[in-house]
Structure formats: structure tokens, C-alpha cells
Length: 270
Image (cartoon, rainbow, N blue to C red):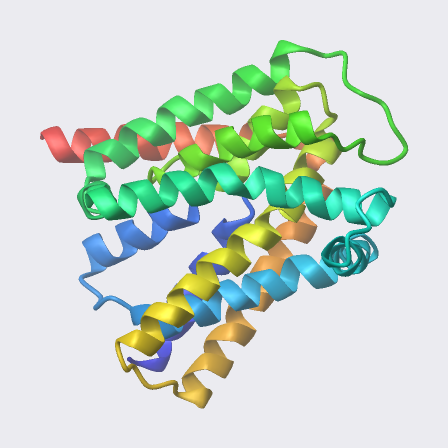
């Protein structure tokens, strides 16, 4: 694959992974309208690993506690704060894993992937849902730190499972769910970012296993280039989103989603 194609895919994935605009939809649209060849599982692994490193490094103060908590959790120490946060993240990931497996076994993932009309509809529907959930309740939880609970984690996880439908946006739906549960905008975004860690790890592990079973070769240079560009784009996207959150909220992304959705629907029916 050409260097330009790799760079383009990595940047699009990095920029849209954490913004509430659906990274999967943008990659589908890129391939559909540009006729670029599918990037393959190796590139998928690299771009996801790049975005994973971006969220880990940006939120290092939080993520280091997650790793410590996971280590404690594996030794049976569930009642420390770190291990409880790790447990909450695992609980929130289970619904998406179950739903994703069901979709893959039934073959619906392929059917949804190439449905541009579906992407247009979900862009609008979940864009409006983000606006509604963000403005529904002005009384938000005001904590110095995020208050985690298994109940809320599971609820957000169930909403997160819908992100397997192209155009929904994992970031957007988890932010919407968090806002409905009363978390502030800043906390909702951070929750969404931290929830991406186990999801990306699970998706990357599945891709690595499929890559190995298919006998695909890893090209170190290709992986390194893709990883660097996706990491840089994702890190900048997180920084910009958090910087302008208080000034603009989610309105720019909502407007973008609706306009893109209308455009895709018109394109499919005209």
C-alpha cells in the first residue's frame, strides 16, 4: 500500500477515534468513495495500537492506576480503588464483546459495513441523541474525580455495544450515556476515553489472532509509519476536543454529523 494511503488512513482513524463522529464510518466512506483497497488486518492493528497509546499517554495519571488496579484484580484484591476502576472498565466492555461476537457470527457485520444509507441515518439519529442527552439535564454530578460504579459501568457498556453499528460512534454513544447518568461534560469525555482502552485492546487482540491464523506477514516499516501517524492524530484530537469543550461543547460535532448524514442519504436516493 502506498505511503500516502497509509498516512491518510492513519490520520483519519486517529482524528475520528475519540471524536463523537464515528471512525469506522469515516473509514468505510473513505474506501467507498475513493476506491482505495482495504488496508488489511495488519494496518488495522497498527492504527488501533496508535490510538491506544495516545489515550494512555494523554491520561497517564489515570491509566497508570488502571494498570495497577488490573494487576491487583488478578491477585484477587477487588476492594482497592484502583482494582475497582479496572473492574468497572471490564464490566463496561462485556456487552460490546457479546454483541460484537453475535453480529460477527450472524454475518451482519459485513451487511452493515457497506450500507451507506444506514451510516447516513445513524449519523443523524445519534447526533441528535448526543445533543438531547447533553442538554436534557443541566444538573450534573460534581465530583473532584469520576465516581465509578458497576451499575453505571454496565449501563454505559450496553449503550457502547450500539457503536458496532457503523455511524453510531463509540465515543459519541458513551458520552451520551454518561451525560444521561448525570456526569459533567468533562467527566463524560474522560469516561469515554478510558472505556476505549479495553475495547481497543480486545479488538486488537482479535485482529492479531485472525492475522496469525490467516498467515499474514507483519511489515515493521508499514506498522511503524501507521502507528506514528495514528498516535499523533489521536493525541491532537483528544487535546483539541478537551480544550474547546467548555466553549463549544459538542455542537460542532453534532452539526457535522447531521450535515454529513443528510448528504449521505441524499446521495443514496438521488
